[in-house]
Image 1 (tube, rainbow, N blue to C red):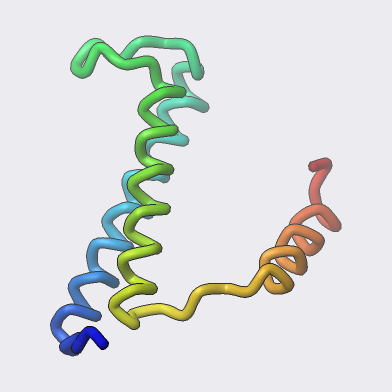
Image 2 (tube, one colour):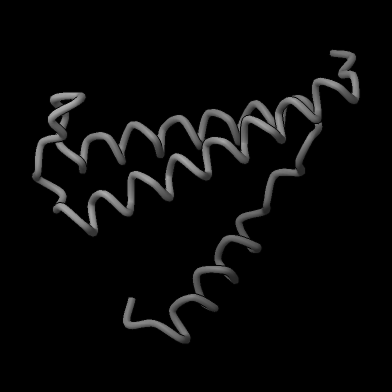
Length: 91
C-alpha cells in the first residue's frame, strides 16, 4: 500500500486547481474565437487545445484520487449530476 503525505495531497489539489483554471481559459478561447481557429502562439486549433486540457484534467483527477486527495465519484453521483444539469439546461 502506498503511503501518501499530506503535502502530496495538497500538491495534488493545487495541480487540480491549476488544471481547472486552464480549462476555463481554453473554453473561453473556443467561445471567443471559435473551435476551429488556430492559436497563433501554439499553432493548435482551439478545439484541440481544449481536448488536451480536458485530458490533463482527467489525468490530474486520477492522480488526486490515487493520492487520497479526493474520493472518486460513483456512477450514481455522476448520473445525478447530469440529471441536475439537464433539468435547467437544453442539454
